[in-house]
Image (cartoon, rainbow, N blue to C red; front, side):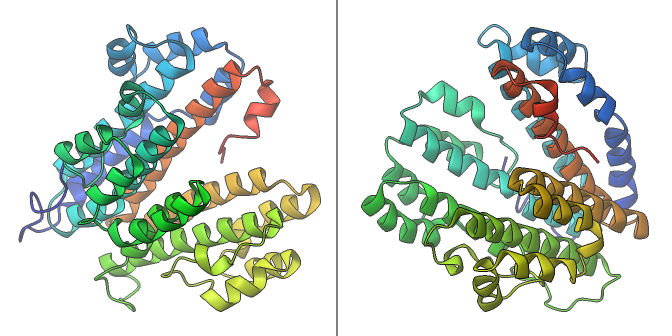
Length: 358
């Protein structure tokens, strides 16, 4: 559905109503005990378990076409879109616009999905079921993406969107190298760098806008940190500036480039930052075990905890809604990882390492 121009015009934000609805939804999410049960089930058992939860409608709708982890994954995507569409239907005024702006992340998801699908030669139905229709793009634009005959056609069709300029530039690199990384990175940067467009650079911290900006800057910081660690560990001769996202507080482009070249200094910088306490145990694990995957899961958990803290501190704001969005995404990602892991024959312990558990 299209997010802008439909629900924001001139109306006051209805925080109390939306937050009450969100708290009810949040209470019904899977908990850590549910995940620990799921990791010990086979894929058919997981599917049956899902049919007895709030995913029943989606599981039944897709059950004739898919089975196993594919069924679980596509049901998760459809359910996620339904819940986030509900958020937009409930919301009015500035609150609607705050949520709509953040949900553009699913436009980014859909663009990357179709690019990956075309690159891999996937059929249209597989691409369609991987979409999460919860962003700004209209149904017509998503359908046009699905029906694109080439990656070049996708890039051209997005010329009038936030992704247009960066994708066009990245496509030239893709043509030379025939790898997707430049295109995917261009999509991510376009999303994150437009998150803060038009918002005050130094809003009052306790205001609705100030809280929103705090959260968005933290998300940009964590994305930059994730990219920096990947580059530092990869040893690849890649210019970190190509992955830098503007808008955070922790790094500027120069400092990120310098720190990427020295893992110890990068970790020390994060320890001394405002996020140091939240990430202390994760940083220790990164230094001791050298597990980048484990650290990235810790980053996801830390961002959710940060949103939860803001929600507790400022309960009548956009923060509880953003916290719910992250928590719902965490549920979907965890269930997807469990289903895929069980299908691949991973042990429960191996799968649990892939989960974000608070």
